[in-house]
Image (cartoon, rainbow, N blue to C red):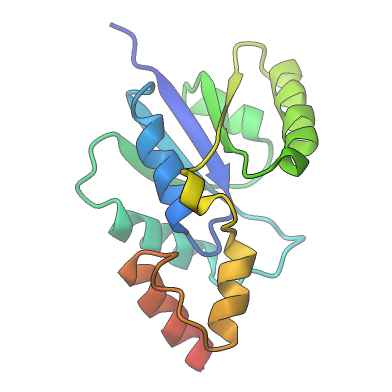
Length: 161
């Protein structure tokens, strides 16, 4: 029996409840979901790649089928190396669609067997983004509702330095 492997790429800086929702729901149609933490030199992340991987591993400890890896370079190549046939992307608003659609087509051009699946987050999470969480947390706001307690603790520690 073939294992269906999906990749959910992103910066996850930080991981939000919206990301968690997409990852958990992806397990309904993939046997394994590789959460691929992107190394993006064009951004200035709050958390290092290693810290983001550690947070994801802590949040998804014991969840069967979820694997955490970091990657740089082309997603299509990462998918080929790991035998993935699906890319999971979250869409919060129509404004996300044009960019995500172009990326999906490029990934398919680079790796013809790679399909992209677009998921919308739970209705009460559609407004949520990592950048909003970082901003609220940096201004002293309570982000407990928007992130896992381990992520909230890491945010408080990071921002208190």
